[in-house]
Length: 120
Image (cartoon, rainbow, N blue to C red; front, side, top):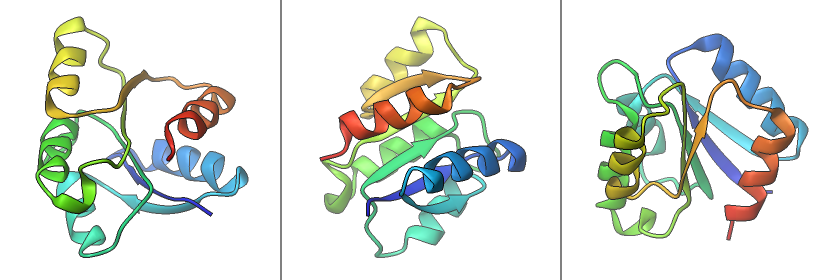
């Protein structure tokens, strides 16, 4: 069973994402922002990171940059799930090392399909 780190400052969205992923057989670790994600990961490995962009303390792109700087996350798929849809923001996400960019609101089936496609 793949482990996914779901990072979002909105508790309702985090719960919806966690419910969707758990219902599809994934283990889910939840974090409220990028800083919380780093603290909860510690030395733990996950199979995929799903993060919002706009969050307090540490945003999604900064989290992606931080994770990509760590050897254990060089090849881990990282998806940004956000309301941001500008080309500039998407390019910044790609430049930071994000695997993909999804725009909220999300379709639960499509989210699971994308995750299954990018998982190793």
